[in-house]
Length: 150
Image (cartoon, rainbow, N blue to C red; front, side, top):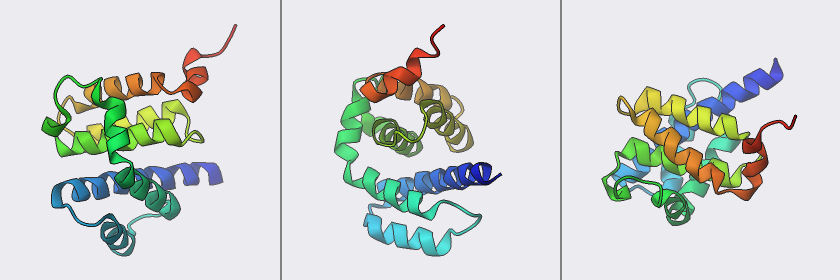
């Protein structure tokens, strides 16, 4: 049961990270101010506070590298993406490239579910397609993509 609650706490953190990234992208506020605001105001439910802080701040500091990782897989310029889609691509790309304790399938599923909840009608398909291509470029993810050997 503890593992299940830890997974839920991390899912809640991802939801808050998406919201914080959206705010950062749209309002242009300092990331540490947004982090403080979320940690004080958005304690709704039990989320993984450490994961929220680590990932949110890492994404905001690595944004150029993350954008470059998925830019070649876009069907349009990144600057024209919906802010929710852009935030999801940044979050998903970061997790796929940097958080190897999070399984590939979890990264993908969480991003798709967040896209269904917050994105446009078909954005989950777009997010899934781009992140799958990003994941296939990460050498440490290739064993997860190969599947079980028979």
